[in-house]
Image (cartoon, rainbow, N blue to C red):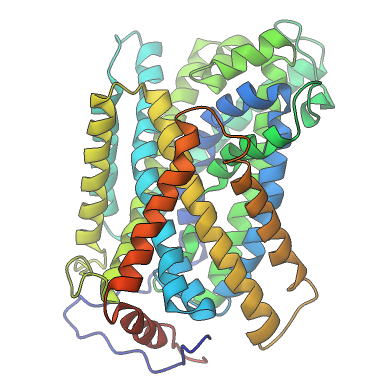
Length: 487
């Protein structure tokens, strides 16, 4: 494991302040991955910007994202059969490529979680605004709604982890059911020849329109990956899940399969539901709430209200999952000596890293206020923070995938036929998508975000390079924390 050898895990000191609790089963592990992806909220908005880039072919961009994420997930699933750690990619990469690379991977993932802790409250606010508008309540600014959503999710995330995961999974199950009911109506009217306008059921949504360069699909695929972002969150519950080497890989695979089927079916319904002609594409690309508009058109106003409400509570579930995963990563950083002690690495009597939760929520609140003071509209704030998060996440995925390839090819006790090829394909897809964020350069301010992420990574690299002994402490701690029975 790149110089990290197994050693006995230290026992809890009995104070309740040094260890997380192993309380979750398979459903709880699935809940955090599904919750962080927030399928309902994600698919309710993440097709808008791609529609302005690739027109009718938004489902094609989602398919590319799905393929890339599937290959990435293979490496994660194989690694989680071996390693269980609250730091997720931080530990996976540290164990396979060494502590410095592990820290950089974890730092990239932490940047992603911070960005999502900003973007998801805005998502909650956008759908809350739409829901209130449907009820006839006047215009409400997005900032107070976003701060309210962040505060409520933080309070709930302080609770018992099992109750939080049950709540997240229940919320998302209800929201998904509502969206699927709408999608069934859309497909039925399209196939039955009873659309509200000139829409039709067509497979042209899986091909690029004339004049749209193939390079743009890579740019649009980022928003497909934004929808899948968080599938790996179950990995952060490795120290709190029973039989983690069996349940965590199953949770990752199960969450991804459900999300993939849901995303492709629903995004195709949206593209066809608006229509593939110029007017339909423009309506899709300019919509503030595509599913609610389709609900109005295909069913009626009551369904639109239900859709907006479902998307807002889906966003709140996603935010709980982000806070849970991000706080555990920050907990792992502090436990391994990043801040020189126990500054944020303390847990409550219920086993929650409460200080880390407060830190993430506080940072997100400050950024939200700053964005509003700059005059950002809600939809812009969501996509800007979300794009930054995805780019940082892709770096974490890339480093973890390189580590998975190295481990599977050279270090794994058993090798499978796909162990060499699948991580390589994942690396190619990730590198292609990252390249398309730089060339051809997207419009301002999105052209700046790759360099902003590079700056964040440079800060992390400076931490681990210039801080005396940090790399050694990380390696020593990981060698203890990754040493469980049977390793």
